[in-house]
Amino acid sequence: MQLKTKQFQELTATILTAVDNEAAHLELVTKGAELRLNITNKVYYVSAKFPLETPEVFRAVVDAAPFLNLISKITTDTFNLSIKDNYVLIKHGKSSYKAPMIFENESLVSLTPIIINNSLVDMPISCEILKSILNVNGREVQKGKFIEVKELQKLYYIDETGCFTFTTGACLNSFTLEKPVKLLLTDQLVRLFRLFKEDVYFNYGKDPLADGSLQTKVSFETSDIYLASILNCDDKLLADVQRPCAATKSYVTAAYPNHLVLSVSELSNAIARLTSFTKDKLQDIHSIPAKVTFDSAEMTITDQLENSEVVSIENGSYTDATEQYSMLLNLADIKGILETCKVDHITLNCGNHKSIVINRGTINNLVPELTEAE
Image (cartoon, rainbow, N blue to C red; front, side, top):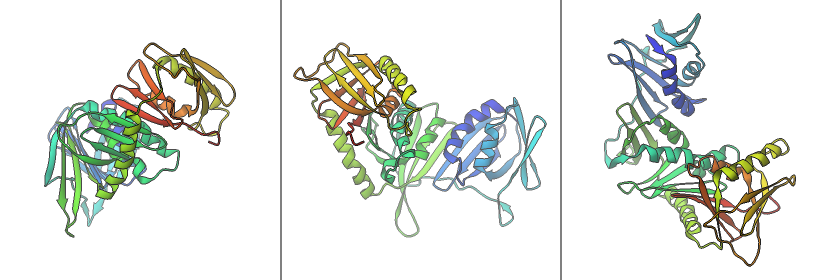
């Protein structure tokens, strides 16, 4: 079976981000002129279709991570898959590799799809919403790879009003879903949202287990992709995340004495220049404290090496005229937020000596002010 490398890699690259370095099974099975990739670790299940030029007969099950890692490194225009004895033979150019197939009781293992039998909520969800959750809320969750966080801070809380994530700061991404729902999604599941190129049909349900308990499941489906997962959404976890979510909303809606309209490109370029100096001088590039002061006309950012940048405060701003405001912020946090901006301007609200709120339309980021000790 011959496959076009670039097109196949475009599909498998996203799957690899979720299964890399993890035990998961990958089933490659044809149905006429269509190859289906089915992947599961028994917590999530993905089924993706890949078109073939001609009908084929093929079925194999292999370890997902090593197979997909190999595919990601192929540089020839095409490669070939064939079944030999108890392995899949992968040939590209003059090179060849053997991927052992997985058997159970002398039979090729079967992958069990995650299916929702007792549906409670179903509705369409825009692909743009999924992308926003992935790119905007995901930026907050990714901080947990570099700092110590609680398990709850690795999850995405989604209800019908938006998505909330929090670590050192918080991200409140507002949107509207057609029906009420309360979910806690894992980062692994959200990373697989990259698979979707069109709006999805969403399903949520709870199916009974043998012991009488209920198992929460979700699925996201298009004509080419089926993604499903088992979730941990018990009442205690939901309550634990709803408290910081409500607190963040109160900060976002609070009245601040300073409301600064700033150019995303100007601020981004200023921070890029400052961090180009500090990243070689400071051990932790995820924590770059800088002093920020401003008056009614401009903002000055000064790093720990006493390098400084001045950024204009634009029309539509207002500031407390009684004093110049000064605060200590983590430039790495600001930089990460700006990298996900799709607008020309942000508004920065501050003045309570606790945190700032960066607003860009329906997205709000809460960033704590640092103390000198930090």
